[in-house]
Image (cartoon, rainbow, N blue to C red; front, side, top):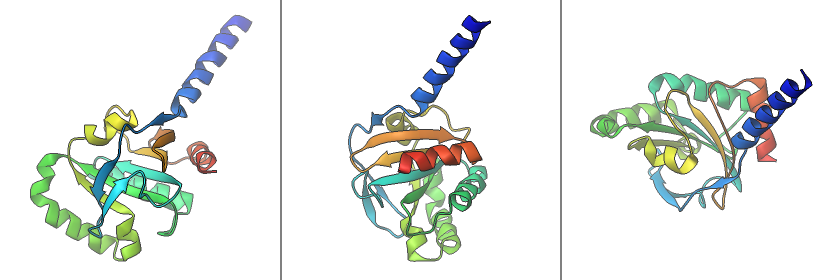
Length: 167
């Protein structure tokens, strides 16, 4: 029984360590926010450490909004929200971005919102993410070091973890 408990502890510690494992972005990336500003990631993100809320599907936007609310984010905080849509959505980019600009009516919110019309791999690969079934939360330092990442809906444990990476 003790050997089994020790084995489970080692596995859990390894899993937690993997989630918070320090990785780095291989190079800089250039994306345009809803305000039309071209921003060089990670150097020009809002803070020395930035929370990236990454959604792949329209249905995941409510989870992003829940994270924003539960973290208590305002437009002046060090976070961005990213909607990563497939390349096919570029044909309706004007309509999507126009609707989002109405939803995020202030410049401050538009500065914090990105729509990216490329394959998921454009962000999944550098962030070490597989799949698009759940939204992702990444804490990124301005030098490109990934301080940690979690996925899915906000809960007390995940929020505590993200806040610890932001310290």
